[in-house]
Length: 336
Image 1 (tube, rainbow, N blue to C red):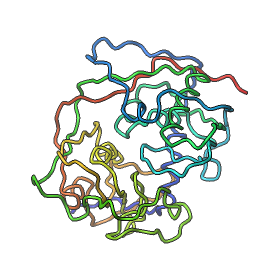
Image 2 (spheres, rainbow, N blue to C red; image 1 turned 180 degrees about the horizontal axis):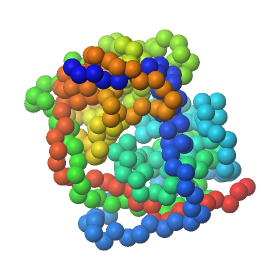
Image 3 (cartoon, rainbow, N blue to C red; image 1 turned 30 degrees about the horizontal axis):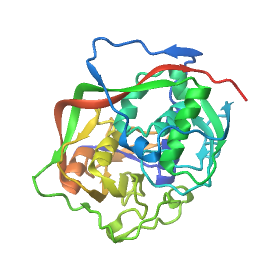
Image 4 (cartoon, helix red, strand yellow; image 1 turned 30 degrees about the vertical axis):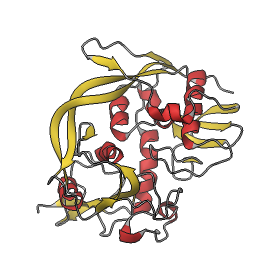
């Protein structure tokens, strides 16, 4: 293999910088914004997602405070008591939601449970201040709401404080279809999830504590329901994994590599949930967090090679339907 850069960050740096990435994006400010209509983009209105109906429909926090935070984002200033990714892992908080120094864009992706490929499209269309302006949100609800119910409450808060109006469309776009490399066969680092195996609902705290991570049999993460960064087996590699996740969630998360410039859709035909681990060597066009040293590396699979060899999957260029989120209107909030 040719020379590739070896990124010398450790998994703690990688995880924390991923948290900060959204907060650091963009520098422009706009006090008010309405989305122009795109007549040239054929679209169909999408129905309400099943998860919203299952969670109980529209609901709101009992009390909430929103304050802009102008502190420079850092590992010590950016935090949330609720995991804000699309995964399901979550430890009930007794109705408390508290987040500090988080970009507005992250609150939006949390509220609407956007997959990585959906966020990738929306990021290119929102005003820059949505990516750069950061806020502290403290909110509380009665009872012990689920993570999806917290999402619905956040939708109401964003509509109230930011005047957010958002809708979904189904557009025909260039996509990458995730398919099996050989029909009926998957790779050595992915397996069907066994329902009788123990699962944790909490994110792996070792990712930020620097301790040795707990893993399930086969080296998979101990946490179920969401895809997580993992400590690589070789310095300079990147690694991620999950347990008890659908192939659709795996597909939507693959744009983590800048090699992929289009949404990824699940076309494997594989139902049920899976456990997997994927490890690869970052390439010159992969995301390299600022301020980290890059050194030549002679070995290791590329992202696409790892996808084939480790998971038995490949990507095929197609045109297909993509559920796109469109922000019609958003404003700066009134401070309270």
